[in-house]
Length: 321
Image (tube, rainbow, N blue to C red):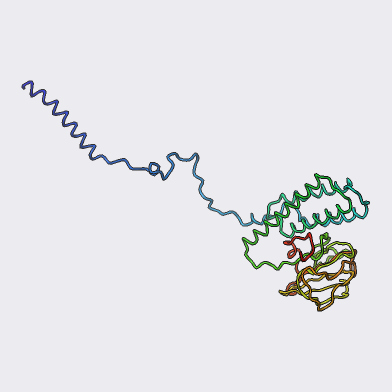
């Protein structure tokens, strides 16, 4: 074979190889675009496995779990009774005596433990009763014993504020979760009175038997003015066995309020009353162990807990305010 023909074979081989390579490239598929390259997913997987959704929902009982401790009502009534006894036993002063400071400190710690409970474990009425008791008994002690230590006063103000915020929270949640027609509001029938007995079953203070208490008792001095809780008209005013001097007022919405153990009547049957109008004076007539106002609320012929109606209104003034 001639040398020139031998040299042409390698050149042809190179050309053929290049052509094959070009054809292969022409038919090779383009690499697929990943979701990460398109910006739809992160290029790097997150650390750890992905947490799947829970298959079993939380049990309903979590929202109504049992309280960590007993109801706060017995503690409130015990403290109020002890506070009244101290004000009778101890002389008036310009500063809180050590005994009073100790009592308030211990009681404050008990309220702090109560407020540390989850929201479902602090019912609205308990919160209202706690706030009423703290404000009223503190006011009585300041008037009797004078100035309280600054740190004790600051702690007391903080607890009252926390109770007020929790009352507002519970009420807001009730409105948001259970939209219902709100109950008519009624005013407090007496200015800044201490809560000495609540609505419901109790041991009768006179005969020691267990019986139903159809209202609340608001401790106050004889002669304090009692106001009508809402606009209405007097249907009864006079002496009723057990109740002593009593005023019964009928309001719109088939609502009735009663004010008993009065020392004097300032109205008569048939009188029209505006909310906050005076109707009598605090006394101890009838079946009573001391001066106080026994206040009842009846709706459609059924007794109701007055605090459920009074709890949403400020009570640092007259009922009509």
